[in-house]
Length: 598
Image (cartoon, rainbow, N blue to C red; front, side):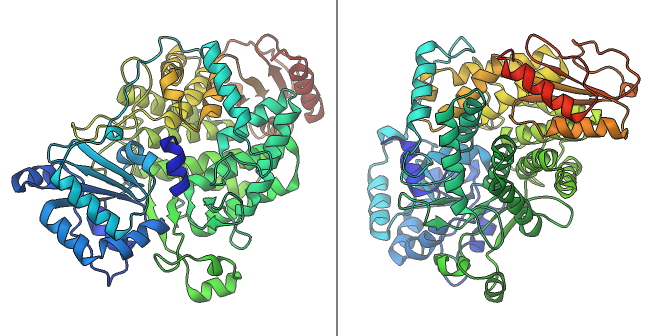
């Protein structure tokens, strides 16, 4: 069984607070090891004392992390073994994206044992019962040799940014075969909505594939069972091979992904329950995960009482829940979460016209730019103070949010901000041969890796930005990332084949280009712009051009001087006549895209 499936069966993929924060997810009365923060000094101490090093990768929202604290780490024999033979580190995976990305295949909690030189000896996924854990600690200390699967694979990165025909065929087959025809979602025992899979199905559906339309709708409909009908938002996943056994943690990354995909599904498929899912998620973000300053919190715990499953609690009414208390919200404010939320809110605001969603997106990005920006570099820190980093995830999330706000508001400064952040990414995270690392290289112990999901996101962003900005360096960035994704050994055994196909297909064509040529605050221009924002499909270039701003950055198309506001539609090989009304704009979009000329 591939590692990613084992991890999903334990806890879904999705980081200082570490030693000082460990008590936040363990009951205060429980005995615990003397946790330390991740640092080279811990390994130096282990060398001086002839000890090994244990790394516990945990999450503040994680039910099984709480259980392991209560049942395993509090056990006297385990505590004695750790004290005698180990230095022990705890890392909140949300606070350290570099380590989270390196060990995410092992789920949370993840247990990694090192020798004092930093070699990875053992990796274990999920909750470990106390007797098994004690045996593992003792055996590893007596014979500290790396297990075979503790090795990180090395890839011979492809020289081409295009998918080889055989690889494309394999990925397409995997995409089609991954759908559970009986229940929707993926064919695995853990049920959740994989956003790339559904988005790619929607893209194929827009091209006329009725089977993919049905598959997307089946999963979208089924995943509504994970929606919290009281507070809104979505639980992370369901166990038992169905949609009826949710685990109740609510991660911001999950909320943002669901908000974005239900917004896109609503505008393409027109089902009102998808709009309600998006509104519900926006409401949850506003009421539970938004700080007074407009920043975005990281997550809400699965458990009201750490380690106790909360099925009865989440079946209660709002009043009854509040009478018992509210599960802990992790109030760390990360740039990554601000960017993810803002992009999704901006997409939903454009589709729905919801002014509150637009304001929430604007505030979240403004907060991050004021509080997480790294000087004048264009880049972003993860937290108020980073002990490592910077990280790719924060910066690509913020760049995408900035570009989404340019599309939503038409203000040139957002496009310039997206350009600056993307240049920072290229300078900090680019790796030789192809692809981008998850963090700037920091030392030799557990160096950061390139991550498939992050490279998919970056390739799609850099390619789209190249069309907005007219700058070849961003196309080159997208191709550099695609060489990593086009490497067969990279794509083997991943759950993200649909995202790789999305990135490859977008890189191979131009986006639908909708331009509103109008003075700002002109009623006719605003109406055309709102129509453009409501078009289905995630691969679009939408610009509201007031000529007083100066020329568009990518000005390959020359628009005629007209006496009134107008909209133009361009595909890969043709542009429309001007449209002066929303109805005519809608007709032209249909005419140009339905003929297959895009």
